[in-house]
Length: 117
Image 1 (cartoon, helix red, strand yellow):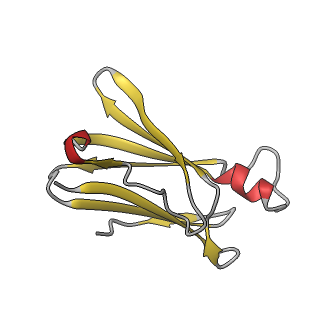
Image 2 (cartoon, rainbow, N blue to C red):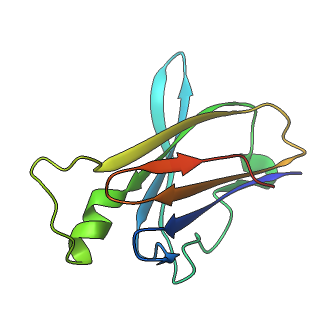
């Protein structure tokens, strides 16, 4: 079986994004359902896969990263409202035998992602 993991890199400070709240939602015809919430560790990763084993299923998902709270806690001067506050990444899982790694590379003003392994 595959798994879903994530990793946050703060390129504004050149370090892992530690202490960031991450929420995983499943999205289907009934709407959006919170599957799991976690906080990134000192390496910018969740301590365990967000989905694995019997919990990983094909479908549409969304990861929400609380980036604005992270930068505010670091003392970064942010406008009100924040330009980037919660970063939502929508993606699909088609083959549950594969690993899906969804990293977030961010600053207070930009972000990017890609599918890792």
